[in-house]
Image (cartoon, rainbow, N blue to C red; front, side):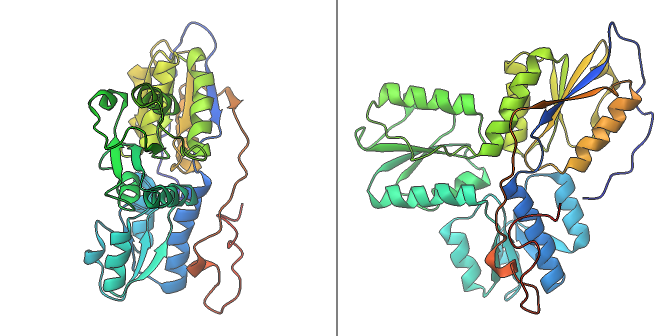
Length: 343
C-alpha cells in the first residue's frame, strides 16, 4: 500500500512530566484473511485487467479501498450493478447463497475472497440448520458478515446484538439452541452474552470451536496489556471496521486514560497529547502497516521517538488464494498461491 503525503512537524514537541514513550502493540494490522482478500483483488486486476468489480468493500478500510479503486477496482453494493459476464470479487466478510445465485444468474465470473474463518461459521450454520436447531447468532445487525451468515439458514437464525438483547429474546425450543458469533467482536462482550444466554437457556450448546477469529483475539489481548500503562491509546482503523472500534472500547475498559480511532495520522489532534507521557498504538485487522508507520513518524515529531513493542502473540498463519487466482494467465502456479504477499 502506498504512503500518504505526510506533513512533517504537524504535531509539536511539547514538554511533559517524564519521558515520552510509545507502546506499540504486536500483533496489529493485517490478518491472514484480510491479506488474502486484498491480494485477491490485486491479482484479479493483474490477471483479468481493469475493471474488476467488488461487492461491498473488500475489507473495511478507507485507504485500502481508495488504493484499489485507483488500480481499477470498482466497488458496488449489489451484484445487479455489475455488467453481465464481468469479473466480481466477493469481500472478505462473506456473502449469502442468495448473492451467489444472483451472480450466477448474471453470468458473472465470481472470485470468492471470503475469509476462511468466516466460511467456517457459514458451514457451522448450515450444519446446525440441517439438525433443525435454532441458531443464536451473536453479532451486529446490518454487518456484512452477519448478513452473509444469516443468509445461509434464515429460518433457523436469530441475531443477538448484545447482552442486553438476551432478556427479551424469544425462542422456539429452549432445549434445542446453539450459538455462533460474528468473528470480529469483543471477546469479553461475546462471553458476557453467552453467559446471559446460558443463564436463561441452560441447555444452550456451544459451537465446536471459537468463532471470534485468532487475529481479533490477539489484537485485543495486546491492547489489554498496554491500556493500563497508557495515558492515550490511538487505534488506526476505519469507522466501519468492527474489530477496530472494539479495540478502542477494550482500551478504555482496561484502563487507558483516553482512546481514539483514526483512519490516518493526520487526524491526531495536538490536544490529545497534552500531558501525555505514554501513547499506546495499535491497528485493526484490515489496516496496512504503512498507516501505522505514518502515525509513528508523526508521534516522533512530537517527541515520542522511544518505541517499545508489546508482543501478545506471534502470527504466521497464511491462507491460499481463491482457486481462480492460483495460476497465472499461462497456467503456471503463481508464487503467491499459498497465501498473501511476498514478504
